[in-house]
Length: 105
Image (cartoon, rainbow, N blue to C red; front, side, top):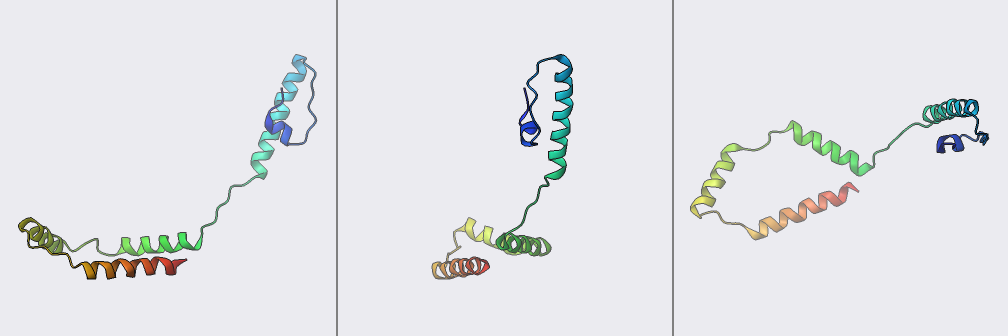
């Protein structure tokens, strides 16, 4: 029986069932599959959004990860109950980041 690669290659299918023909068909099918793999190349392209995210990722990787003293102070404030969330400031920062993400498109 012919493989899908053999069918795609446009070569005629030999339906003779002799052992000699099976051997020849197997060699032809292997050659056809090899030809298909050699002529068809994989390719990809990145969207503008993907490039922008990649650039941001590289920028973030080159910057300091966090201020450990600030993190320690926030942890202490949370632990002793004195940490207060400024809801207006938080909302403003969320909107700012949303606007930045929309401008990437």
